[in-house]
Image (tube, rainbow, N blue to C red; front, side):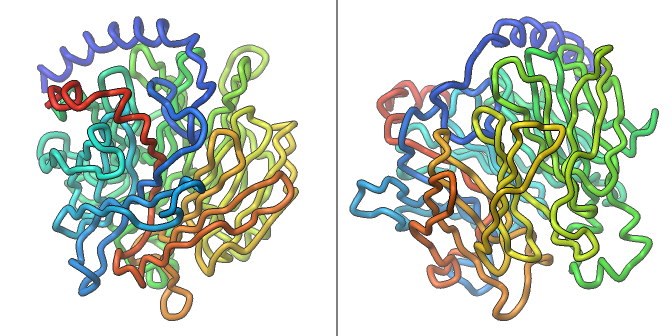
Length: 441
């Protein structure tokens, strides 16, 4: 551990320099709006592929978790069709994924087995290839359930959801090199109002700020949802905080009270904006995180999503490129909502549509005219029977209405449960070159 602490000190200085160097970088011309600000080689214009990280279902196909590639270019003869899949030959509760800063590789995690699968998406973007597996995260860090994968310069910051000791929510982040070497660990704050829980990561280099949110531990997220909600003691073990970190020092500097399991965090991408927004799953609210007039970070409840007593369960959110609008998916009622964020202090819902019997993840193109929705939340939390739809659906958005474009039925295709999505492009292959990509490993 001493070596890790030494590396942490050294890394802090390096990150400080890199943060300043990249602070002025603009995300203009990028693809989906939830990517790390450090990610280069972003898609310009129409995306060609949608990568979907899918949970394996026993006796369905090979039963394993897999990365599925869907053609999403409307000009293609294969539009809306599965064109490739690569199995990891095991079932570990596939969940989230993230590109490296150079966009050549896509890291994807399993919440149950804590394995991290790394796919080469640069050599042949239409046919990703599994090139590396990190299986020792629990042994080396003490953290389990790799959830968020957030690109940093030459590094990947991974948020764990739980720990190897008791399966509770106290956890931390692990920093890896792009080659999969562990560099440092950062425990989530458990003092000064902190509960030690973690979930998402979001960075604003200009403000030297890293935000983290909180969820629950493995003992809860791997449990049947119907049983869990009836267990009053277990329901107390959900995160109610967010933390503001000093990015250069990689140290938490303030814990914010945000009751009800704050999940995804989205910074406004408009130049000059210094605020972020999140949704709380259990209390069904939108919260604004921003510095006050004195520069002190604050969290403020700014909107209610439907009727919280009905527990619509807001899950994923997606902010548009200028920070004026926010998509919100609610799992239990299968609705996709749009909020006007022209005044982030007072978000207004302006649209809603039932997009599935259950919905979870949502991604949008940079120009805001295409929206993608996936169905699965967690294997033991998904609905049963006829309500257990598993799909990816594409929509066109004209600013007034979501219009269906295509659907891939993941059960019919024997692919399992569709969870996280990332966008890909043919242009990546020519940008990288086969030889250049091959030498990275």
